[in-house]
Length: 381
Image 1 (spheres, rainbow, N blue to C red):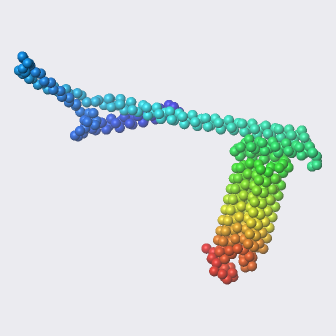
Image 2 (image 1 turned 120 degrees about the vertical axis):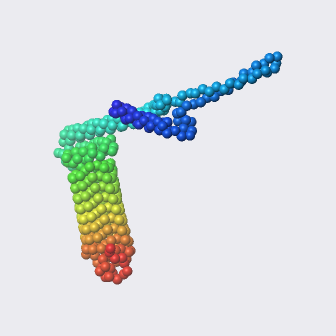
Image 3 (image 1 turned 90 degrees about the vertical axis):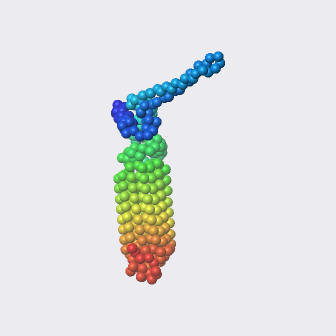
């Protein structure tokens, strides 16, 4: 690496010196007025004058004036090369020091990352070993539900799990491994995992049926195809989480933060989404049959092709939501804000159903349905 750097620097110096030499040669071959003054080429003429007086009896009897000319040679090409080299050396050294510092910093960062990775691997290994010992020593799976030893063992398991998740900090992959271990050990639904930090964790296809994840941090977590049926996610942070095709049947999602979440094709049948924040969420083709969405925030949400049969959308905020081709059969829209909502081609909507909503006249409808409403509302584009 250093050898390559020196080669590059030599090349740079060679280019600089060649450029200077070429400039000076051109100046020598094609002189113009004043060229010697700024290039140093050409001859330099120094003149000196001396006066000699002969004095006799205090009287100057003769004066002799002598003028001397000294012709000095101009600076040589090598003089200029020497000057260029003198100026270039400090610059080259400074560049070298900076490059070496950057290289040292990168090497230090790489070594730190390796050390952290090894530490996290050891932390995970110790956790799994101790949890395995707990399962075997206490025979946890064979203890009855009312056995005090079972509660004690579960408390220990929860404490260890929360501790290891904190220590793994931003290591989303190993956090996912911790949860997968609990799933494999059939402990995920047994432990109280409320408040756990699983930000960015990869939990795709995870079986988390009935798991208590209340107030958990699952921001940007990957839960694609995960089974969260009956799980408790109340007050959880699922912003920008990937829940594509996830099973959220009868899941508790009260006041859950799902802003910008990917819920394409998700099963939300009977899900409790009261007060949930779904602003900007993508619910394309999601099944929300019988879901509770009272007071839910659905501004700018994409509900295209969604199934909202029998869904309760009372007082929901649907400003500028996309409800194109959505199935709204018997959906309750009382008090829902439809300002700017696009209901073009929505299925099974009725006049009475729409007029129970707020600002229904500011929504977008098909031309035919608009005519039925008998009001100058917006046409579908």
